[in-house]
Image (cartoon, rainbow, N blue to C red):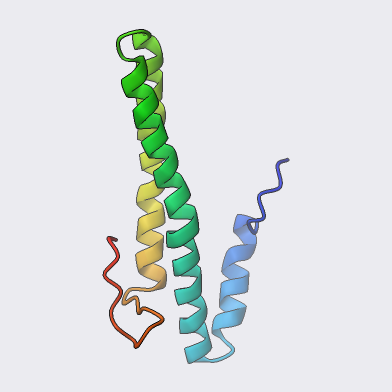
Length: 109
């Protein structure tokens, strides 16, 4: 099994629940932190992979149409992973606040 540094799926809910019960404010802070990590790190990597796949698809359209079609299938699969990730980010932190001055964070969600 490849080590990713991510927590096993079945442990995430337990850890979030434990942390959220410490105090209502601590739970909100922890959910906001997790939302930022998911958006800023995981979401950006997935988006970057999608852009690279698009370039690969465009480069291979004329020379290798079968490859371009397979890349397009992979793009759809990647997008299907990104959609629930975006939903989870919104659920974890429905009103995101920036670290500077408590202004609403207008990142594209």
